Structure formats: structure tokens, C-alpha cells
Length: 150
Image (cartoon, rainbow, N blue to C red):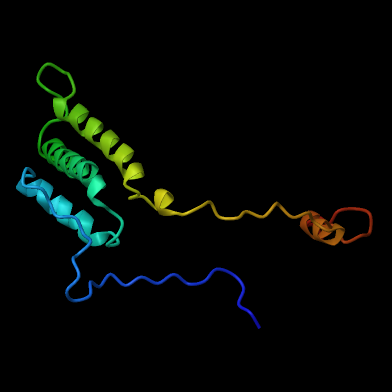
């Protein structure tokens, strides 16, 4: 009997001895925080997800992530409102960094929705049979709906 349905997809991120590693290497211009974000991103994604042409986008991701982390730390330790009653500038820095991260996450396929190959099949809503409708309405077929009275 032939198998039906989708075949299982198994990956093994093991580089055979002697072959070059597919993972990107961080460029020299990244700072220590950005490099830490870079290594975290590269090591937690499948080995073939990022290619050399993606390097500039990955670097921008790392820079924006470091900026968002710094702004979040400043917001956590400082006042949200300055002495003159205006919001702290770190709030807009954090907002812009997060907005940039959201845009880049779609292009780098970092979120669950962007990693999915295609939309799952949806089945149309089924129709109720007469008996299922009667059960939902609480009608036992005697002409008047059942009530919670004795």
C-alpha cells in the first residue's frame, strides 16, 4: 500500500569532514554586541538558510537588534519622561529599531509565518445534518424546544 500524505523532512546540520562550512562568518566591522547577535542567529538557524548575498541584511539585523537591546536597557533603568515632560528619546530609538527588525525578519525568513513554505489547506465549513442541528438547539423532536424546567 502506497503512503499518502506528506513525506517527513529530516535535516542534519552536520558538515562532513573536509567540506567547507555553509554558515556565514561575521565581518570585521561588527562590534562585540553585534557579533554576539550574529553568532546566535547563525547558529540557531538551519545551516543553508543564509547565503553570502544575505550578509548585509544579516548585519543590519544584528545592528538593529543591538540598538533595540540598548534602548530597552536604557528604558528599563531610566525615566520614561524627561524633566520637561516629554518622552525620553530612547523610546523612539527603540520603536524604530523594532520596526526595522520586523521588516528584516520577513526578508530573512526568521518568523514562523515567513518560514512556512505555503499556506496550509483549509477545509470549507461543514454543513450540519438535521439531527446535529436538533442536538445543538436542544430539540428532541416533539415540536417544542427543551427547557431547563421540571
